[in-house]
Length: 518
Image (cartoon, rainbow, N blue to C red; front, side, top):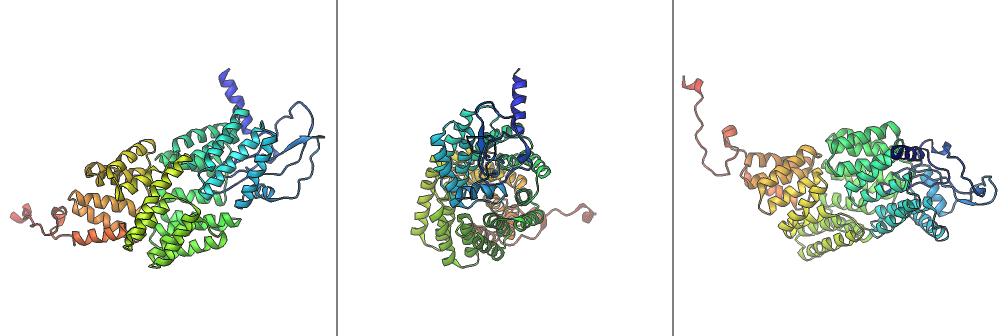
């Protein structure tokens, strides 16, 4: 009986109900209407006949169905009303274009007002909750996430079985909070309920990536590409290729996504991703051009302003870089931006300004934590370099146990080195470089750990690699890498026997080859 019940729920979810709105997800915007859903219908419910007067909507990353608001009356469909701000948000979602933030706010206000009069409407709870997720992910307003969780769980309470919109919304919420275990749990549940709902799979890709599950990422991308094509899928493929170290493939996929983008917000997000890849390749001038193009498409986006600041700093335009970072932080209290700005100030010998930003890092991580956001890796790296390395190890050890990504392996390895355990740190640094993307930061951390262990040949090789991948990867780190290489000097003559000899050490006599002895 239980299996029959589960199968019935999955069948019901796979054919979305008439009158149910989509769950809107984070990762990019109030997004896309699932292919073919407009033609699917569930049998009409018994009871008073009602009129259907609503607008078509889609879902952001997590898919959705038609938004149909029911009111008493006849069984005929009325013409949709003229679109206001909320209607534009739904219409944008229906055509796959990210909604403008003011329109998204209007949709939230409209759903809140509707639910005050109709608190049992599970579909509207799912729309509201997922719109809150989207708002928080795009604005950095972490207070939106508790409201999103309340709304999504209210939807599940009103309809516990087959409520794929609420389940998908909870997956998106967990991913936005960097809780990748929960994102995987909810995302896999959503995929079981509606396996052909393409917008579930980008969230699953994020979840598996955060857990260090490369096979899960590959499976989800393969399924996504079978179900859908277009800008969003090309962008997701580009991110996966980047993680695999396939930089040319990543650049091609991300460029395709930018070319296929339909609205200003989607175009800006795509251009930003291409620019980030250019930055990681050590091309700050090109990264700056992409950032400026993204800001021209959708002005004032904090992640793009931070990217602009990174590129400007690398090009020596420090005053402009500081303004860009300050602009990003004024709009989005992101701890990583505060840390980057602090390190830029420190590289300029402006220590009071640097300490002010460092003080903000802990405060902003605490603030984000009140919204359920997990920023342990950022705080751990901050403590390792600017605070208490032993506290960093405790934080990052717990975080790595929860989410075994290459990024967390690298962060924990670096913290162990800074806390005086370089042998343990090297194992994790090696793991990060083996399983993660080609990263200047990973190579720098590994090179410094090897230098501390007296493995000078390997240290020289990895520090050189860090600067070859991206000579500007960090205002403090890249300068430290150059100093370390200068201290190591040129490789000693004599071949492999000398690779671990420190500079100035006596060169041991090499054994005479047996053939020469004869």
